Image (cartoon, rainbow, N blue to C red):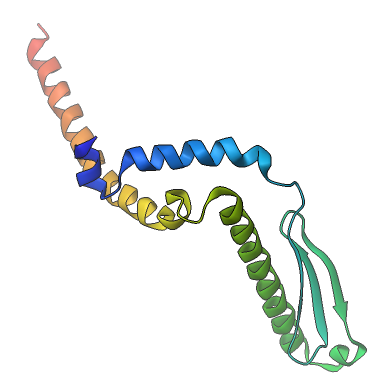
Length: 143
């Protein structure tokens, strides 16, 4: 385990314990999705967004229809992005409240992913060298 910890810079025992707590508490999470409403600065575009179902409602003020199409499309996309980010942040807060904010699965997720991706390159190189060595040995042992 120490080799793993030194190679990746994370404590695998802590990660495993956090994962156990995470999965044990999943049943405690309420099934309700986080729903938010986001609105453009001028109030002409409004989106109701649900973290489970996505866009639930899109409202356009009649004045928004006078905007040029590129500006309207950009405004809609901006409001959708804002609503999605708010819903995701709400889901994260709710999960952290239920599962513990110090859980390594939350705080170190990006770090762990980067370290694992970094480790796969050398691992792949080692596997390719091992396969080549095995092939050479097979060729030497064949009559």
